[in-house]
Length: 424
Ligand SMILES: Cc1cc2nc3c(=O)[nH]c(=O)nc-3n(C[C@H](O)[C@H](O)[C@H](O)COP(=O)(O)OP(=O)(O)OC[C@H]3O[C@@H](n4cnc5c(N)ncnc54)[C@H](O)[C@@H]3O)c2cc1C
Image (tube, rainbow, N blue to C red):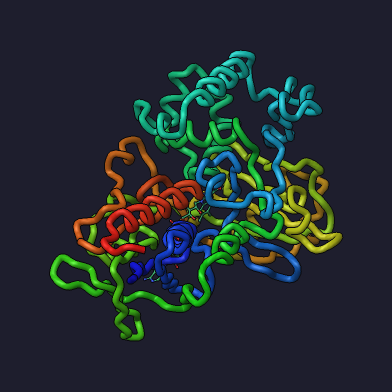
């Protein structure tokens, strides 16, 4: 009895999920990862007792793929408040979903962010997206998020003061030119769950999958230089050290531009960048487990989060961790970024002693997410490639999210197993 051997290139969430599914089906799957650890874009660094996610990000437990691929209890998730603090005209307003955070009812009612009409429309939209499956949402007529929100009747104040900085921090662009399908998907995830952080950092998600891989099947510090091709058939990989490794199937689970380069595929996407500046604070800046939004033009920081309010494990005892999030990768020296972030936060929290803040690290993630404008969904590649023996995984085949990466891993694994000629 001979078993199928599959090589997976890239140990981000898509590659990890793919390799584990193939292994669980009883086949050999070996993962080759260029860097020194698993996780790809979902990694956490440890520094002086702080957990620093490589770019601020969150996990929605309502992601369908997360429910099938992860043990959420073992991740010990800490939830954000379903709402936000908004810094507007020199004041901070707390807005939240009063049905899930009843103590915020009064504050939310008096915040000049939503009109009664906006509140009604939020409830209506919530009920509409809850009735649709994720697959259905991605089949709705496509347009920009901004166009949809205006047509739906939301006020400009609501769009500019809440949606733009909140969803802008998720889409990594504040013009809201991202497809309404992605907006509806995230809106549904937020309606059905709260944003969370794992106790041991976002990197724990990848660690959890990696910990159940077969022994010796993960090869770190092993960049793949090229596919080993024979006419239109891919028969294996060539590592940067020149080693040739043969396999029945190769799954490409790298970022899309690397996949395009390795396979010579045309993948129609562009990148969005993100920057996160982390500070250690001797005192908590505010008590809520919430993000702070900074609406308006001319600001550098779009949102910030006192991460240790949400998950105290992110900071050592008696210290606090602040993440300042910037859309894009500004053409500014790190020191200038740090000073600007402090100034903008000080405007919202005038009592804060920013002089006592210690800059920990700045992450500039150039290749953070692929842009998802209207019409992109029809152009995304499927797992099937023109080459026999080569399968495509990675968020680029589904959507730029943890959910998308995990779904892509499963689809690639199922295709590899489907096209297996050999019995298990
Ligand atoms: C700052 C930021 C914020 C985000 N916010 C959220 C969020 O809040 N919620 C959410 O759901 N999603 C978020 N995302 C998106 C999410 O993290 C990604 O969609 C997902 O992690 C992509 O996984 P992947 O496996 O497709 O790719 P990757 O994680 O990029 O994995 C690709 C792997 O391939 C490896 N590789 C590349 N080339 C080679 C080679 N030649 N040989 C071997 N290995 C190679 C890379 O080193 C990497 O490990 C965010 C992303 C970033 C960066």
